[in-house]
Length: 75
Image (tube, rainbow, N blue to C red; front, side, top):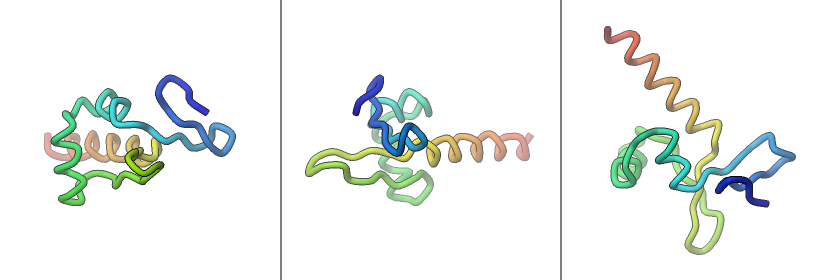
């Protein structure tokens, strides 16, 4: 089931975000997202099809919150 570009599962408790949604949430370009995944600095995507991947929404939000907290400590 699709909802605004997101795949909804588990009755809406967990969502899988496609790349455009992750780009929109983080403000990072595609290449930076994949570089950070490679360097283990960003949540790993999961395969949802033979040529499709998605990110778990809660993990992306957790990464955003951790980035905000790092900034707070560096000020």
